[in-house]
Length: 307
Image 1 (cartoon, rainbow, N blue to C red):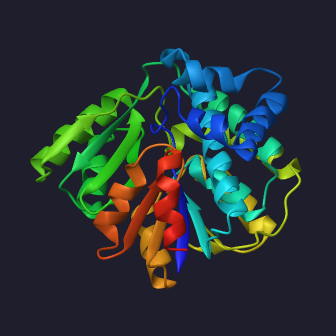
Image 2 (cartoon, rainbow, N blue to C red; image 1 turned 120 degrees about the vertical axis):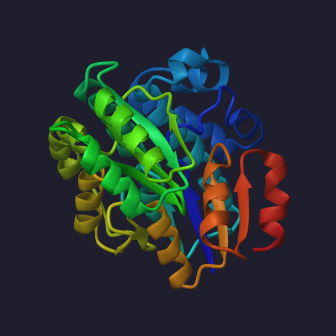
């Protein structure tokens, strides 16, 4: 059984998807559709940079979504179709486009605003994120609880065994990193991010995006989407939108998402979009699974051979 998994922020690179757009009409049309939806040339920024503009959250999110959807449409046109889908953070929107929950043009506009609202929720430099390596969820939670001192700090991305990202105010994240090391973490690595995603500091972004998500046309997904917020399959439009709203200020439970996919019978994971971040995480969570990724046209043959 195949699952498609869609990457989130951090997987972007200048030039991503350019080879697909040059080679395949369906991909070229996808980038053009994103430009039309936003009323500006997102594709030029994706293909040619500059990198510092592409890494602005409000650009990164629609850029990764567009690249991922272009590749998904190409796979779909060639008969490579998943039984289930999931995405990491922003990637959950790509998953819902693939499942038919949201129209692509609507999703592009939603994630542009999602990125903007998340960025504006916390003044630059006031928040932070750090990756805690080698400590389990209970230990990371204890470190956060003991380091909070009235400020926000909490697990934000439960990515894989021994790989948990925390988010919150900059001072509280620094204290939690120190406490995590004292509790046995191997390392605590500050992340280069522009905002503290997936924690209570994102509540203002959730409040702003909720009416837009609620008013966007949505349909029941054609295949179940395993949600970040609770690792449960979403099968209706209403519960899908609820999960996207809750996701903004809640942790991404990626380890649980992959465990759920495995429990549903998934043995083959195809990472659809830029980078190989999810492929690495799936390898740590679902031992023995077949894991493939589609970053460029050269990757297509291996995917099609097994389908």
